[in-house]
Length: 533
Image (cartoon, rainbow, N blue to C red):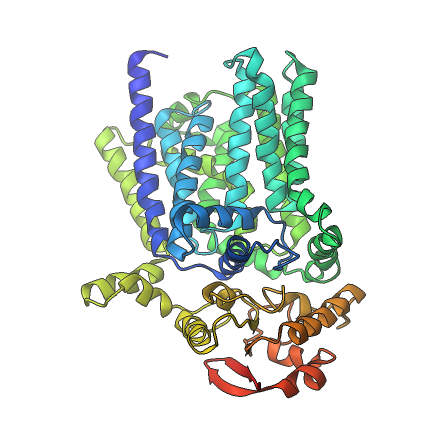
């Protein structure tokens, strides 16, 4: 590459990173979402009380995301903005990796545009920012870049096995976040097979990295009596018998509508790639002639990733927007080429740049979650103290309550309960456990494992044991407060009863636990019971 070409590439890399940092910085204004609060609560208890997922806290997902939240607490503190800073830095690293990867095939400008489009997509939806699937895509990018370094032969032969080890560990981390992402290991293995130099040692190193990561995640449970059983029941049996039975096909079209401004140009770009006759203008043909065609092994890898993402999406059956993230990673670079093609007929570079800015401006107005930013700006202009916190507290949580209610309940518990006393949060979110500095009585971060039922309304044997464990935890820990929510059910299609309804149905609560408590107060949709003595 000539000196001038390197200068141009560095310029567009800088543009893509600066633009990405600007876009990503808006998430610093976002509160934690429902899923974020559950993971943050579990990570906070892991950090403060050394409570392991599934043994001291509970969620049905694999633990990779919880450990990322734990890392954000270690680095930036246990707060919403601390996690958002961590996520911003993580995605800036992703942006650099995406630029390096796409630059193999696209021009510097198209690559920069693809990076900006990806981050515009990421920041456009509150339900993407900080969730597990974008993190998984980050590890996919890291592993893929390492695979290409091996393929290109630019590293020392003595270090090739270390690169393969790191690639295996990176892509296996996707499985630690979502088990269906195990499928991505197979295209990566196929790509490694096409590297003839030291093939056996590379394959073994790759698989060794993946295996060591999974063993490291499993080891704490293997060393704890009953640990493997609880991890298995929480992540496999619960999902297969209860959560996985609730499929939401209607969400598929809803997700497509939410992402239509990115899906349409992406599909248009794929059409231009597959059907050259659609490139009717010479200016469009010049855009596509400037692309370096991927070699066969690269095409197989890209298609393999797309297929793995689609299979994972279909297996989950929920079709939330963040479930599409691996597919969008493949699709969005084609969207950037569609944008390039749409402005290619404009002769002057300044006019082309203005057209691109106009497109980005349209996206800012149509897809950016301005409702999350406008209250902060208004509070700043009005001179409200702590404007970020004030604006976020007025937003509703997924349970239908303003965040100010969660904060008020947590503050009430901390200020009125005697020092050292535990409390219990019987809710469908992790907000109270995260916001309260006290240890909880039970390991159940949410009421999902206790209130969910099979389609016929039955509760499996393992869930009945969990219910008995819950009563035993309340009787042994005797929390000073029990906070019970009566959350609206229309937002949880797989939950048919509120925690308030469920807790009275659990055998032993009304007979053994309730006589020891009295009504203390009600705040929002929360009922607070206080221990009698």
